[in-house]
Image (cartoon, rainbow, N blue to C red; front, side, top):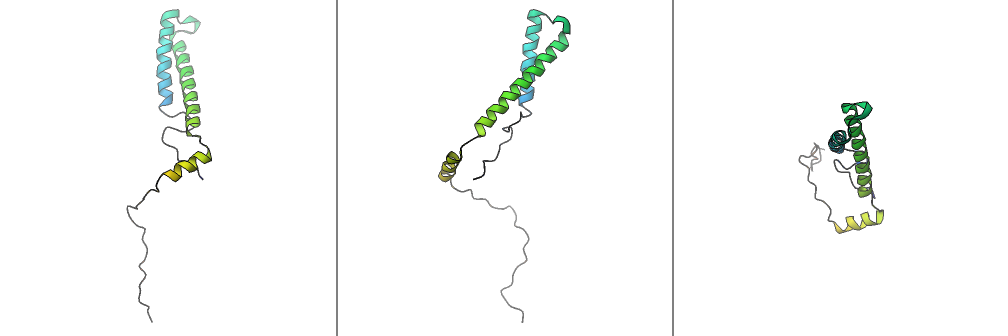
Length: 107
């Protein structure tokens, strides 16, 4: 049985939402760290940038792991799930062109 289709934003790689959230959290954490302990030899912008990059990478990595764990299922549980669900009724919005077959025979 094929695996269930992936939903948007739930792939194995970090999505476009995971990276900015991690970067914003890194900006907040880096700014607080700079205010509390000083920038050090790297300067303010480089220190905050390092925190943003590290936080964004870490957050995206763990979100990717979580989405893989969440979407991974055993074939037995998938089969049980699909047996309890009714088959979807899919209707085409337009039918493909097919020439009409006449019932009369041309002699």
